[in-house]
Length: 192
Image 1 (tube, helix red, strand yellow):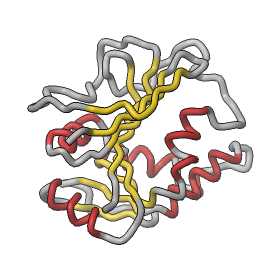
Image 2 (spheres, one colour):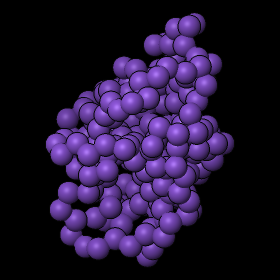
Image 3 (spheres, helix red, strand yellow):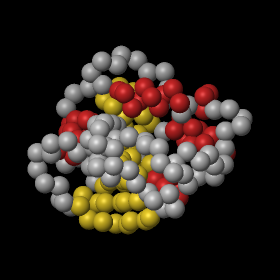
Image 4 (cartoon, helix red, strand yellow):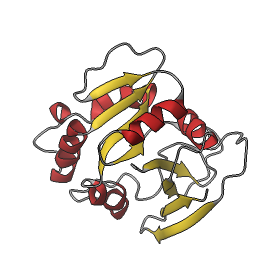
């Protein structure tokens, strides 16, 4: 059965933000360890990305290969090509069409849709939705593991990844790595 991982980029207080802090905006021609572990090391194991409408709209503008410039680092161009090639599932009640190749819109019951996706042939899936969609997946027990990049910032505003959870969710720590900018890369497995 295909595994579903949720990616979260969060502040220490659980906010879905990409904050600025010392060293956070240093450009590099090489991927950082978090990008390698969350993405590059998983290219061969993942062939489906799940999005909410807003996350899809943002990524469909920035990540297609057609948006890349020759001056972009090679790992960024490679990531765009990989994202072009994978299946992109968009959960939306309002979106009626997609422009990014290999994208399709789904509507209906999340549990039934994910069950159907798990039965399809293919590799693992990554949920790249925002906090609201991720909360819905968590509340329904649809996520197998979490990969969290926690930034060394307390923000106090913005959307909260976990919101008002209906039930306790217990996790098993698979790995934890401190990065040079003070970020913490966490990999948790959901205990069922």
